[in-house]
Image (cartoon, rainbow, N blue to C red; front, side, top):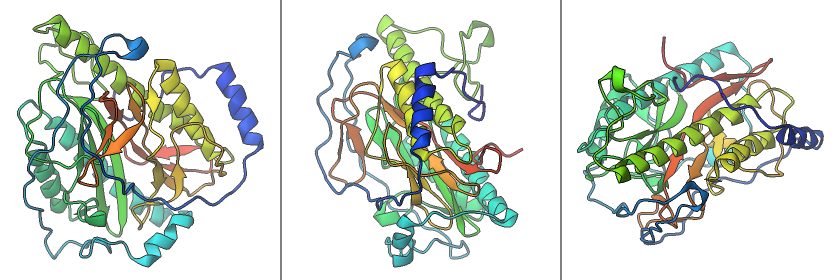
Length: 377
């Protein structure tokens, strides 16, 4: 299957009853300002070998900080976002934390489609480069150059001072991982968050892959990942086989939760239903859904209202045609509790458990929802 195919899970009647009850209390309400955590901690080192009701968890070394290459530059010919030079979004963008932008003109929507499809094209590139021995910094370099070649600006670069053009989050890193000189290892679970600024608006998406989980012999394949890449079928040890089985299950759950959230998006529904749908999938798999980080509105502003919680919540907002926002659930195999490294960005699970994330940018239409971050035809 591909990232654009729909959900295969059937939602339970109990869940649908909860949705109906929530919908009756739906109302328009402002959201609080979004702000990244400023807390800093050391990297997680507690790597328990017990994985709850999902069986034993393999012992592995926690991801460590590696050196980073110098920050990459962008040609003057590229139109940058307002924060590119200073690292600080202007006051008008901070004010946008309380504004929901409605895209009511087709020209505006088409502009967003174009940026979103470019973000997806670059995401597919990043995922294809994730091989054992490849540095996340090398992938970031490829991403940076590919975005510039398209006449766009890599949105993360210098956003609040972020030093790279993409986020690469490995194993227990939930999000905002900084690409560095660490080589990817066989069995790593890595999420790539790719965003770009094209013609005055942003596109944003994310996906997770398992490094080395692929083979060329289609006759021996026992399945395929979300890209249609055949799974590896032969392993050197039962421990490796168990790790890949657990990792595939987590990645599948994260992707499935994204589509469960998208499935309930339509005019008149509540934004809170998105969180409930995602949380239900996490519960069904026995995983947890990260509370601290949310999806967000996106337009000429990188992050704005509405803010999309990926768990059951009571902050309701009616979905209206023209809304464009991201849905980007982060699921953890253990507890969702997390900490931030002393680099101020990298977010890791406190218990050392694996994390996986998928993200789409979606548009609420008159009759339902359109996924904007689909592959270019």
